Image 1 (cartoon, rainbow, N blue to C red):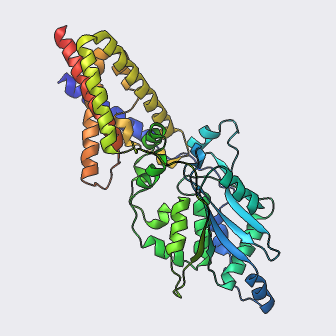
Image 2: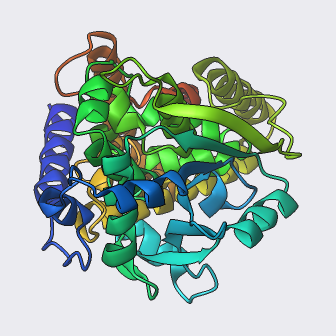
Image 3: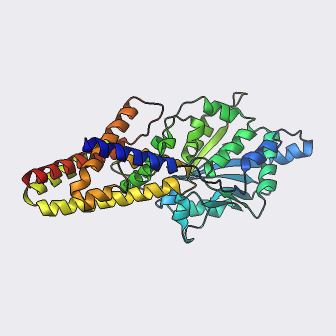
Length: 412
């Protein structure tokens, strides 16, 4: 009966945590391009001199592959306008200062502002090549009216001084802003086509870009909630620059012409892809199983040392759970709200580390939560969160800890 009461208490406490996971007040968006695009006229009638002018211009989509730094993991997108005098101007929605104090903190808390800038395209391209990144460029096949309107929109909307906007990794970034502009230039054809193509989920599309740093990638995966597990379409997945690039190449306009033409590789990146992908269920389960077996064996011969190792491990998990709780209740990053991982990675794990005799209820609740989440994932329930990677790693360790403490109590 006491065990049942304890588990029920933990369950109620968890619900209390979720009740705090609410959307805080919205931060003002200083530059909403969707609103600007809504009122823009992308089908003006052109005079002969305007058509002649457009014929001497060109619009291209620039795609830069992933880089080594965290902010460069997912690549970059920009638009390049070649003017009548041959000068190439880049319109870039991804300018920020990574040396600014609190850069990653602001990013995590959903308070990161990016700049839209206008610069010379050639030196920006050379800079990406010097970093050893893939650099590709494709011409956009637009009718003269749409091309004239797009260039006019970029020139007057952004201007020589640039603009500032509130960044969101999935919903409002350098690729989504370009995607929305391209859709407007095609009269909505691009979005209708992309919406008709099923995707997977935001989580599954992001994971491959995290493979070269599995530990950090696993941490980022842990801190994001079920909101990135909802079914997606190709339109949603074009938050990734490389996905947007391929979509432009695949899309065919209503008149049967390809939207993206003359795909050119300016540089093949020298950055080596990861040799092993550890962000898989099999790999993480193997790591968790080996770790639990080592701890069990150590527990047979060095119980005090093993108890210390378990304590340190669960202190680390409790600290991560504390960070998870803070992100759930105190940020403007909506992908951290209502995170179901809090059910088995939370501040209550400090009890497991410091009060091993009182750990049973916490471990039992954590193990039960893992099993329920796995069941929801397997059943593809309407409300589920893909926590399989974390569960594959932690389930064997939680079980070994419960077995170790049970054996210790029997000896006592």
